[in-house]
Image (tube, rainbow, N blue to C red; front, side):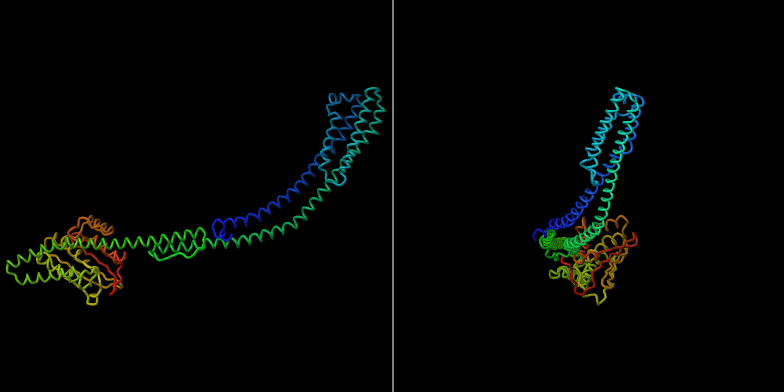
Length: 489
């Protein structure tokens, strides 16, 4: 039984039975009570109505018919044809039929006995009508016929009418008794029914609260757990829900959360490995190309005897690749990342000295801050190749690092050719979808944005503004923590 009550269907069944059974009992009792009194009431009204017709018309019709029969010497067989009234025997038979039906339904005291007397008087009346008919048919003696009419017919019809009135009177008395009984019963029934309804309401209300609480509490817990899972908490678990259908749902939810957590961890690890492979692949693509160009420049400087420039360029190249390798680290300090960019720009300045100059501003207190390696170099490369190079005259690249409350913003600004509206739309789409298509010669903006989001979250990453013919500024936003808890990608 306890196991049954733990189930959702069992609780709802108990709740339904608790409500339905008492109310069904009350309704059935009321129906029986109403039906009993209604049947008695209808039976009395029917009896009174049935005989009331004869009380009003029987004596008058019978006396009138027999008087005209005597006065006009009309035999009984011709009454219907000549007088156009019902045959006296027909009226008597109809009344006898009604009286026989009333024997089983009469409720008034002594009314069955009165019916019996009326039946006897009707039989005597029929005999007296036969005597008058014999006088009319055989002798035509008017005086004797009128005598019998006055002494027999009128007296019998008076007696019959009187008995009918007595019957109706006692039936009406019984009707009043029924009404009084009904009133007494209602005076008792209304408080009892009201108290019963109140008691049933209280009991069902308490049961409803208990059942509702047993259903809503675990459902609310499931909802809260679902919200936490939606926010990324895969450690949450629902409590013991005591074996009902919701408990099955809770167990399924717990298993689902475990599986989702395991899947997400697997996906994160897979993405991390994928990004590491992409990073290594892109580094293998960038290093030879950049190295070939740089060594080619060194060779030409050496042939021209520019020893100082050769030494400077080799030093910058050495510093550049030292930072690129970084002993396999994925994150380096801002100072190292800025030095990496400076080495890159110094090397490129030998090739583009006629069109490029640069400046870098890094506050001393921000140098220890960590950043994902090779975040700025792709943006500087983008400024050079897609900004200054198309300007065709001297331009500049400025790198400024500033602290904004709990964030650090790095601005890479160039006064190159800038971007058209169409190009800006393309770049924004690339950043929003983390795409880096058709950028095999560099990390690409999409790749930088993706690594920012994977490591720092959606509140960080790349933004830019650009005016065609004026220049472009890219902003990199990272947390300002000296010891950053970077998200595992």
